[in-house]
Amino acid sequence: MCLGIPGKIVSLAPTGLAAVDFSGVRREVSLMLCPEARVGDYVLVHVGFAIQRLDPEEALETLKLFDEFLEGSGESS
Image (cartoon, rainbow, N blue to C red; front, side, top):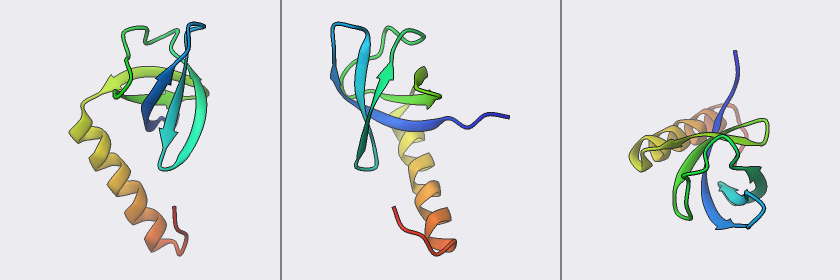
């Protein structure tokens, strides 16, 4: 089993890397497996690689579920 986290691409670098926002936390992510991704796209990220583009509604629903889980566990995002 693996865990992929949805994030939104906020900038692209000519090196094939992207800055991706995960609920306010930005990380550098490789687009090697998802070269068609662009700024504004939501991508599913696993171990530093964008593995697929996501439908924006699907990504936002997943992020909402993560927030609900964190609220229920006593943590906050």
